[in-house]
Length: 320
Image (cartoon, rainbow, N blue to C red; front, side, top):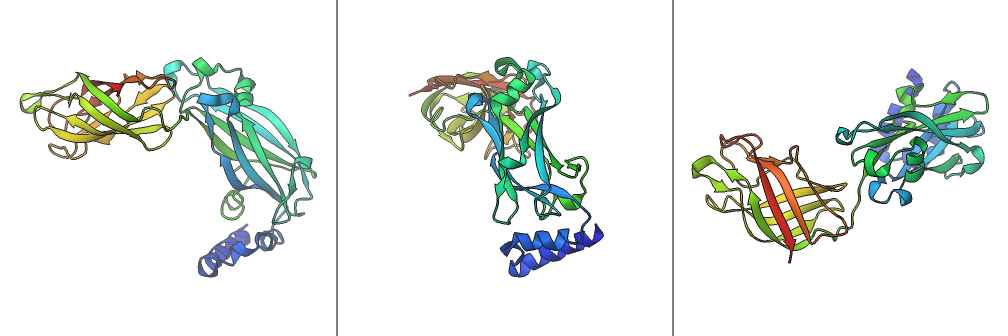
């Protein structure tokens, strides 16, 4: 394996200088496997779809294109087993974690010859089949931030099995890129048009107590824009109207039915270092089918930059 590592390092160096290693993957493969002991792997070619969308589980899937290799140029391929494990990373709705189960087996006949003259295929794990495998309730047992872990196991005709637990680093990285293990993160994708546009911000509660005190925010019209399907920015909120006022942005995320303010600075306002805000134990919920009105709940002064303790802010938004 030391000789393999040296060849890989040499090839990486040549790639930087003249980019020749990329011109013919087949030559790289042959130069390594000609001196290697019998081995095999599933090289990651392209991760087509990296997440499971909880908002549309029946039409969502994790997809990865892989290329099988062995010391007989793919002739030893028999099948690939697909295992799935569920990690519940959102304890607020209980722990629904599940151990690894076999989802399906993909035969060699499902592979076709790729550009490097090696077998290629796209492996798909549909969201619904992963949910059904464990008998999970989508409404109560899965949330954004949970993970379906997908493990591939390569079966060769000579009886050898390769997977994430029995390969050296030379095989899992660099050219081979055969991790065999893929995380399918559970997310909730939304149309980038919802919760955007002109809104009336109404201050509900939250008092900044330093320097004579002030309501945390002032009421008035604001503009909300989308950074992505799940992130929004309030562009011109009025912060500390009795002490400033200061025009500040507020970034918030749409996390599977919850409005979450990630940790961020109150831009342009500080006492010592930075005043920061972040959603605490309370989070407002929302209906993706109705963006006419929503609330945002978060904590201000989370680091006590101005010498006052963190306090909760509640804001109401009504579409204009």
